[in-house]
Image (cartoon, rainbow, N blue to C red; front, side):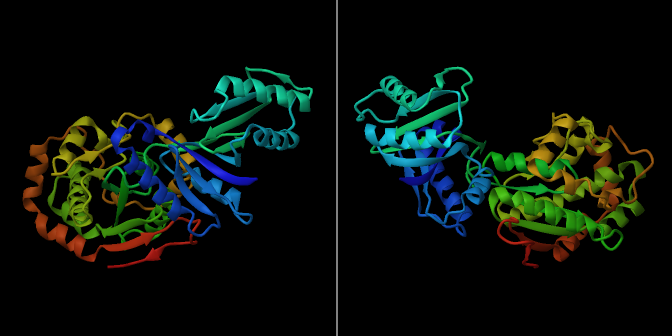
Length: 398
């Protein structure tokens, strides 16, 4: 009797003629995900993905990683046997012997019609068989144990529990975007939402070192490492912002400072996006959460971009964002105290209802090209890998 992990797809099942392309991306991702964990094979099989386990396969570690793999509806650790009724009964007897239950039901399905019994007949015969092994009663609603039997071609997969997958679309199927990662609670959740839609996410973090400490950069590295669990490797740009802030403070009206900070961030991020061949920007904005995120200010800030700016959290409640951050694992890092670049030179009364014309007039005294190019010239780039591969980041400064 073999052990296998059987993966059931999420939205991939709805992709029609493009389904094979999505399946291929998922298979490639899983192969890379498990490259350091012993297993026999990874195979696309009858609309499913099957991972063959060896005797020394670390099942718990494999399950942990698969739980963070987008494109999976659910997956199971199964006993794999030949699609023969007597062999299935033998495997079912082993499952029943290992389980403790006073009630049960059989959930048996045949994926192909070449098996002699249909699903209803299979359920009846296997249910009667289990009753010969145990005094437990059959209960169709809320039984103690559900014995799943999935017949596909010449194989049958027997299991007790389904493990919920991460849903969404496989990594790399949604294109590339660049996320402005602040180190706070919101932007990591925004990045996660885009990853779940299949996007590869590149990150840029703006810092004001040496006017602020290095803590914000360290936080962002930790957050990027957590997010890399979902896409396996990430690029993080660290862009200096202090010189630009000083010029804005010197030449722009105080109420517009934060808005101009963010317009410059958008421009620098867009330049990095062009280098990375990313076709959109992503921010953690949520409507009305802070002064810079009023509808008017969002419009003014977006006016600095010539590519789309996605805001996945725009209508979300703060508590919903926090709950997602906790589930994601970024919350505890995000709430660590640090000096964010936008906390420097904050005006007492920031503008909440700016216009694009106001911002453009305020920028007339600033050398936009020079300030942007200076920041880009000294920005560094790092490659970040997930914590289950290495304890830390691999640096690739440029």
